[in-house]
Image (tube, rainbow, N blue to C red):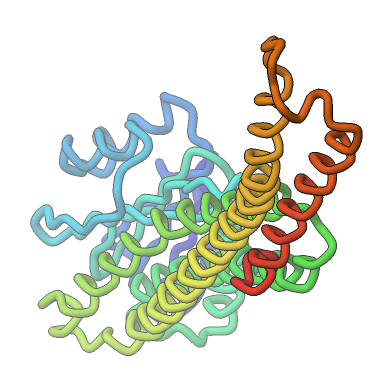
Length: 318
């Protein structure tokens, strides 16, 4: 599907004009949105708009890293939206000039839909008198970036739940949840950090500075900086939780090994005595002694008890 928004030089909005009836030079600015285009519609990027073949190729071969390229007077931007369920990146491509914005995305995106409605509403009210394509591009970027926040807030809520339930759940379950959260944070980071770097390039580009558009994109860049800081803080928190659980697990294992070692050490001399008297020699002095059995049992009891007391004094049972 292809939809169009054209604004005349006297600030009148024309929505839904077919491409064959659209003469871009007759309007102050135009936004053309390609929504899940079929191959015939995608071919118009090169045949109708005459965009650079390399930029068109990047549009058709998903998914590219967020970037900014210049092709004459046209800026080509690759942006990433976010699937709130899978946290996978969803590409949105821009061809941006002073009078034309062409957005291209292979699947419908709620963020682009919201931006389209907002820009059309503002254009119909005559509130976009200049920098129309820049405002439209900023609106889409802002909606895409705003969609990152709910996903990150949901992860932070899961982190808070893990901390509150740490005394109730098993260590294995907690560790599994922590690693799942780290995997989600990694997916977010792969999307947000390249977007932050892209907005840094956009803010510092000569085109933006020359036309005084920095205020728009600085707003989006500030949001991305905040998101990056939140991700790094959450990753550090999950690292601390992971290290704490690993230390706790190691401590438990050490206590178990210490207990088994103490038990084994106590029974070693008792086993030695039992082994000596289990030998098949006929002439052993204690075998004919009436109190030999009781004496050996008492010796073993005293030996085991003295070792337990010695371990207690050394603090091995703490």
